[in-house]
Length: 180
Ligand SMILES: Cc1cc2nc3c(=O)[nH]c(=O)nc-3n(C[C@H](O)[C@H](O)[C@H](O)COP(=O)(O)O)c2cc1C
Image (cartoon, rainbow, N blue to C red):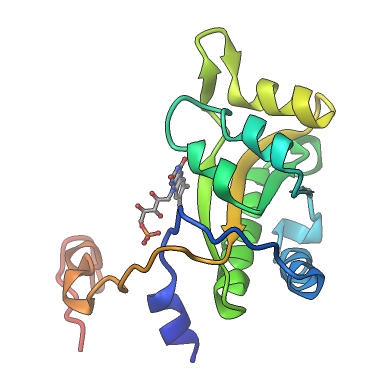
């Protein structure tokens, strides 16, 4: 059930020391390529990284919030070409979440690592750092990296009662919506 898949998906940052089978990687790629994009321009580019040394270097993309990539068997670098679409950020983000949901559906876990607008260190952006490592051309931007692997930690779904229902309005702003 899609509803259960959505509830089950959590950001997982610890992974088993186990490679991901090629057919599962293919499923992730197919999901990415089926993502909708504005006017069908498909401005995204995806780089699959499984080399452990490279994953280690990518895990240093920023000071906080990326180190766990070192322990993942797969990183998917989500890029897009802004010259192809004014809404490349939306297109790249939609592809990312679709990959995450596909991962969940085949027993994998994942976590988003934000790259756009983040710094590697004071004088270098995370985008520059990654572009140098992966030979990404200057006109292509990195939105995020997805760390993917078999989960080595368990997280319960967010309980339904904890959902931010007060952020949903009915008819007009600030008119409460009651969830069944
Ligand atoms: C746009 C975006 C950026 C995120 N960036 C990071 C990040 O850089 N590092 C990280 O560890 N988690 C990151 N996350 C994961 C969030 O922290 C996580 O989704 C949130 O805490 C909710 O937890 P859940 O995904 O388990 O429901 C990001 C998530 C999104 C949607």
